[in-house]
Length: 67
Length: 235
Image 1 (cartoon, chains in turn brown, yellow):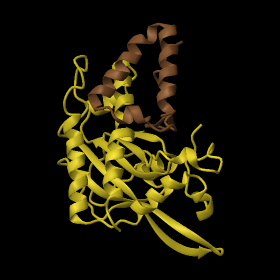
Image 2 (image 1 turned 30 degrees about the horizontal axis):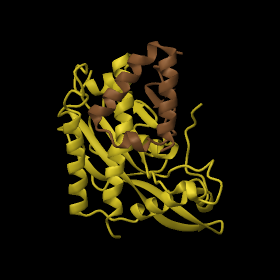
Image 3 (image 1 turned 30 degrees about the vertical axis):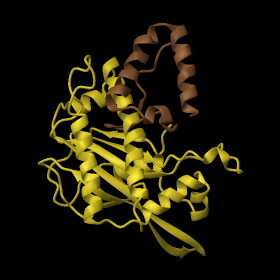
């Protein structure tokens, strides 16, 4: 399972929009400082080499989104 | 698929797009008038935000995202009843500049507002998408202001939504409803090859980590702080 790095769509030359931003930030993530959020995403990307870990993390994030 | 969208909906249709509690919050905010205390408080929040991102976010984060050349502007929604048009009450929706963390090149045009759908700010608000513009003024969305002589090298417009927690109790089917946007934060720079542009546009792993965590922080914690302050104000 590969993480999609480029999530932007160019809508006209030199203007792009960031995709998949329709969902609200979960209550858990709203508690995190900039440093903690950065660390959270860094760990997520580090684990991305392993499919099983990504699957578990995806489930955890989906759970967070339901908060 | 992205479409340039314009606010061609009736007032009833607009009110059926969003969770009721979220919309109530936005309506309150949209009726606020600017004053010096409000402007100062929000400007302080922007300056604090720039300060937070002017340092490295972790040991492996090589360069800070922002610096003293990073300009931040907060545009807040404003509603004005107009019409009736064809027998229906119309709502004029604009985004007004409430706070501005300036840089030397900043244009200090006040009052400054964009209609919903107009310019980067209006598009980010209307489509509820994060918009990046690196056209240095050549794009169809970027608007040069009166007195502005230099375009931004990079600017991003990030919509903020009024997230509420009580929506699951709503009797009506909420599957198609959304949280209503109440503001747009613009983060930009006039400097070439800035870290802001490289890290928000970059495709490398660390750039993506920084971009995603930054957007989540703005649309999460920062947005909550702004809305908590605005909802505490009386009309």
